[in-house]
Amino acid sequence: MTDFASLLIPDRGQKAAPIHLVDKSSFTDWVKTRPAEDRALLEAHRFDGKTGYAAVLLPRGDKHFEVVSAVANVDELSPWCLAKLPDVLPAGHYRLVERAPGKAALGWLLAQHRFDDFRSTPEEAERGPRVLVSSEAAQIDSLVRLAEATSLVRDLVNTPALQLGPAELEQAVRDRLAGLNADIRITSGNDLRDHYPLIAAVGAASAADRAPRLVEAEWGNPDHPRIAIVGKGVCFDTGGLDIKGGSGMRLMKKDMGGAAHALALAWLVASARLPVRLHLLIPAVENSVSGSAIRPGDIVKSRLGLQVEIDNTDAEGRLILADALAKAAESEPEFIVDFATLTGAARVALGPDLPALFVSDDDLAMEIDRASKDVEDPLWRMPLWDAYDEMLKSDIADLANASNSPMAGAVVAAMFMKRFVPAHVPWAHLDTFAWREAAKPGRPKGGEALGLRALFAAIQGRFGTA
Picture (cartoon, rainbow, N blue to C red):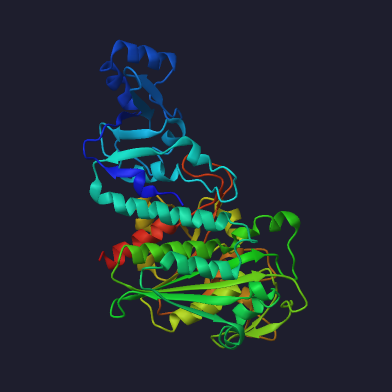
């Protein structure tokens, strides 16, 4: 695990190589202040302050140098403005000269994290750390926690299903919440079939060592406002008897990305000691194929009592979330949020970078939208369109788990889940990709946290700090 706390440290006058940040408009004036040899070197590199150029090292005698790097706007640094630098700079200590790093320190940290669990020689171990010295000592702990939570999501999603089944996902919850005085409960076996029949049905085809379960954790003062965080934990999704093709199944190790987000968010809330009573729920299953697999046309009675006809066994995420949402609502939380890698339709509509956000309460939606913009973790609100509820109609049961229409797939999935949340409980649902198909600075190809920082900021905004 990356020691992020060692990569961002308070400024106590340590020796550190200076970093100058410039943008296209400020570069002309800034370069006039530099020595002639600097100007000649920058001209040789054709450096003109435009973004896209990582850095130029300006020699200052034996083994000493300054760094100049271009950003889009030196007055408004994004979380990723510094993310190119650790990849091109040698090991050592660095300090921004003209301004504090602010939120850009997050990209500096995450740029040095690698998922090396299955490499014989860890990549970062060969390079050595690039340490950023910050004048904003009060912000360091929160930025380190955000980096740790983001890397947790990435690492869990990147882990192959062979090494991360329901039991290992349960252990990840135990490990991450250890030392925080969280009460962890596991429901499995006959108890799961009796009380969470949809979760049990989805996982019924799995081998005994990959049996389904509901993982719950509670943390915080019971007198504080209660919130529930739910995450889809399908550790591998074959599609069940409605089996996926090979290309569709290739990335299905990431189908527990919602659970990874939920766990990371729960850990952020608890580690920041926010004044809430937290309830984490992760239905952990594998959607497998065997003689005991749930079949298209089967009808399963949910925890809420609604009878659900299984139209498509590959629409399994909404089934396990339905039982978990029903359980979460029983304790009358102030609000519920769930994360799920739920539909390809959301990706078709919004692409890989924008999680589809469905919110039952306009005030909560505005809070999340504002937080999303503040921390630059984008989301896009989609409608809970009541007219599409009829697409879930079943001829013989209370509702079906999927529609025969190819239209509005993400909305229809959200409408199914809405049936299991009381109307008076504010609820937010994030249909997130949890994956990055192409690398960007600080954001490697693979598992990705999308919407995590936005929801944490929204919770902080609503409930304050400890």
